[in-house]
Length: 229
Image (cartoon, helix red, strand yellow):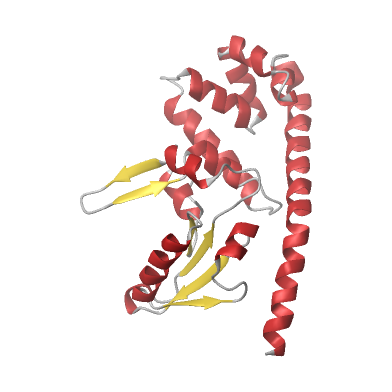
């Protein structure tokens, strides 16, 4: 669900970490613990690898010591702000097959939603992910793809193009996204589209800061407890 997934979707992002979204269930956590043991994974930082912390929305971090993957970090989450429950994520997942194995990724819309954080680095990645989808598939669009582009494109010029190419869908969505309503005005509304896209980003980043405020307090409490032991 992180940088590795972005690479596979064509929005290259250098990452030394592997980020996983998992089903938060006791049996599944035991299976994951067994897999981490094979990788000689050691938990780093807080919180502990316990169901209650994953259900809060905290991430648990591991560092692998096995020679073949020494130093690789694995970050595990089960709940993210604005992102659907795991059962829905699994039902919508993208599976990439290779000769020896398969990889299950968050669907592209779910990955984009997961990237809507307060971090500066995530927003250019969202832009690249949606642009890559548009440029790779614009010659064979489906209604669902057009809706995805209209909902998520962050490049004003491309959003105007898609609104023109899929005007009926754009009008239907204009009440849900102000940037789409502005994009229907064409290139003379370019500055307005850019302002609306930026306003969206500002709102999402603030919502993420508010979401993480109590979680950060919990992390601080756990750090204090760890220091006192």
